[in-house]
Image (tube, rainbow, N blue to C red; front, side, top):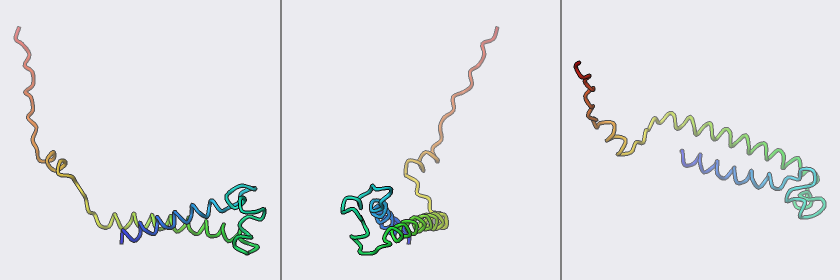
Length: 105
């Protein structure tokens, strides 16, 4: 389950990066490189900007929800992974030096 959630997060993140690069904010972005009309001719739709914006919001919200679900699935398992060194340090006793004795006058 955890691997599936992480895989979806990675895929949605890659798609979100592509969508952000395709957007044309005030004449910039990758879509401006293709032609003067940008992504509208590439996809063949007049309202492509609206679609790209909706997909961007959708992927952003999906990533947020998946991260929260992943966090809750991790807290439910309560698996703790400790190294061998941490276990040895927890069981090892350290000798305590005796307190210094004040000299008699």
